[in-house]
Image (cartoon, rainbow, N blue to C red; front, side):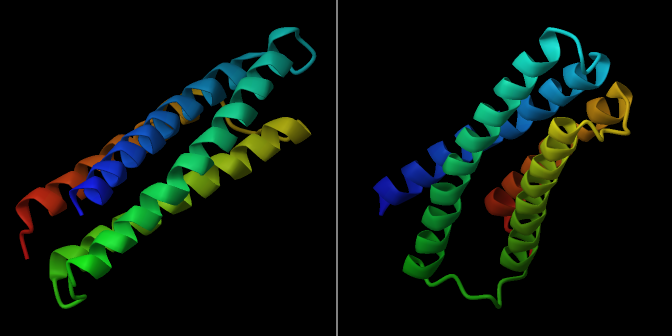
Length: 139
């Protein structure tokens, strides 16, 4: 089971690496004219990173579920409820990145680069919350 736990941690780290970098690409996209030469290059980078990040998220979540079932961690644990809530928020953030990417592709982005700089801070807070919950199990 230590292999599963190790794989879960590695895939979560890799997933978050993508979630940390993708909004940085959005910052750059928001600063570029759509008809400029850099815009399509950034869109291609965002597309590939989003696809790769999604492929990393699936085993991260799957290994987490396997660990939950193996260790028979009951849903009576309050920290687990909180962690699962944050995992759902992380998945929601990932989905929001997909929707933002689609808006850039369609040329319908209405946000400036400052918004995406703040948006980029969200996964840091979500990861911090999950790590604190898993390590301390406060309730």
